[in-house]
Image (cartoon, rainbow, N blue to C red):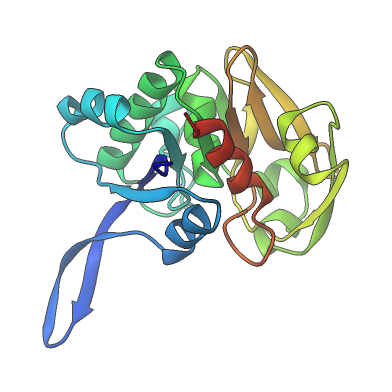
Length: 228
């Protein structure tokens, strides 16, 4: 059986190889390794022309919206907090567009960290631009291990159970859910840490990084959904 092709969004950044320092298409290897372990074939998707998106969606069996720099608050009508890293507007445009196209095509989608935020914004939701100020503590930004409550009836819950300890440093969080999204996991302060799209065969966003460490169950679920 052919392995399903799983696209992984990437970004541009300077990289060194040998004596050279050049702009490169960057993707942490943990994503590709997790897809491979789950039985899929990873394909890197650089944020280039929007005209390439239709071809990606037709050719891929699934899509991972990877982590990275926070989504520009201007995209969802907020002002950027000076403490947030400089946005990457080209990447924002591309990933929001490919997320919408993948959803329309009923392609299995997994949003990771920033990818959760991209998914929410793509569906008309909004974010909290600087989470520590909103919740009056730094536990999210500091990346302290914390236990999530997970809906057992959700796709996430069926993969990991009703409780999950994660380490997931993040400075933004979901304010208003996008159209059709359901919250399915929460931190103890009720910040949403996972969502699913109603009526879609597999469209999940998680605040943590399921590709890291030894627990591959979320990526396994994505690849299983992408199987022919």
